[in-house]
Picture 1 (cartoon, rainbow, N blue to C red):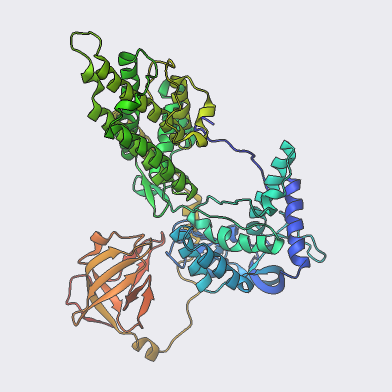
Picture 2: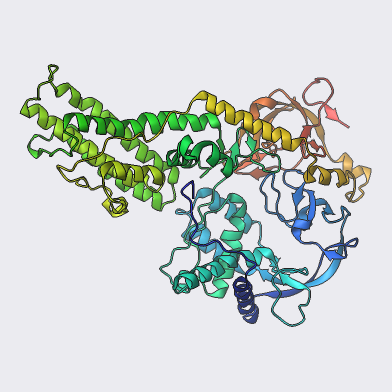
Length: 625
């Protein structure tokens, strides 16, 4: 609430209503033969006599080599996984290597619905969904969808509502999104509404705002469930990439994070800035939102956004307008003289209407960063207009009243600036609600003026209406304040990392050598042609967080090799490095780039990759045996 964020309902999947809703959902799919019953082998911990849920299994991620990946997801690289994909899996309950044990479960056969998903996502939403979302969905579909278990062997959770299912519960990934429906039911019950249209009416828009690590659940799995259950499908899934913090991935377990309570105490409490500082955070988070690629929160960036844009552009325009209005127009909205309107006046009116249309279109397309830019750009145009018109120069230096023609020019200028201020209040309201309401107070208008239908109107403030004195919308943030936050962040991380963590303990029990690959004969190994190469160029692959495009000198030729090491090395750090290359590996296309070889790497117990290279530099192309 202190940051202007409130929920319509806060709901839990532990409620009786959710259990009923999830069980009903399962029964509909099961009764319609949309689920398959299979006997399969699942991981089982003999020490605890327990079938292991994915979150009770840890191992090495097959994508980034992180040794602390869970059975459903690697939190280091964000990959969605299954427990069978983990390398060297261990039970988090006992630390033992689990065995496989036969069990019966119900499955959602996603492979039956590949054609539907191709048509719905890759054709119907090819252009209105974010490229990164469509791209990730395409990769999943092209890779071939598999049946996914919707039940688990556990003694807690939502019971499977059929006979012969004792000791089995609904898998959390299956029942959790159904929680959206049960939450709607609870909200409707609390507010005397009908919940059904929200999930069944074709005119309803269902939009999921999520992170990229949840794309597969909200774009592939849950839509298939909704389709089979007869509900509406998502209209859009504007998933964001990841936001990092001061050069590193955010992690509460490592203390590398900014807690909401700390921000509120340090910045938002009444004596520290109140709502205006809540809006500064909202502004900066929107400005750097990772809509199409990973972004980074820095305290210096936070300071710059506030001082350069909110203070110097937005706040400056509003303050100048109000000060001049009180000084040159007796504190009232001046009349607009249509007979002397000039090109600059006309252009500002066009700018107001154009910006309104742009912001509306961008908001409807979930392009919040661009929409916010348009609002600030409109304020910047207001500053430029005010500077070009220079109404203060129309006032005689001797303090006498301006001549009528000059006063009319002053009137027109400040009338339009005030109408622009009213429009800025409306346009900024979705982003900075505290600022918008403060502007309403200065203009002595009710919050109803902030309704979107009023945007673009240049007659929002009535002629002759008295306005209040200007209030400071934003304050300058000093360097000392930023240094305090940086030191606070480092101190917290240092304190947390000085204590033994569960993650470290897990790494200690992960076996370094186990599950060896099948034995091969020497002739098989002899087929591999290993050479020493020198990296002569490196660059990031567009729209691929983990890939680098390398040019490697092999002595006899220079090859392009695509390597999944971008999470571990910066391109500029590895130019000149000598590496070991498999040179007779068949070419493979990755992100449209043909890769002709493979760089060999070793990963340590912490999941960090290391090059395999000679102790001292030797000639490129030298054989390795």
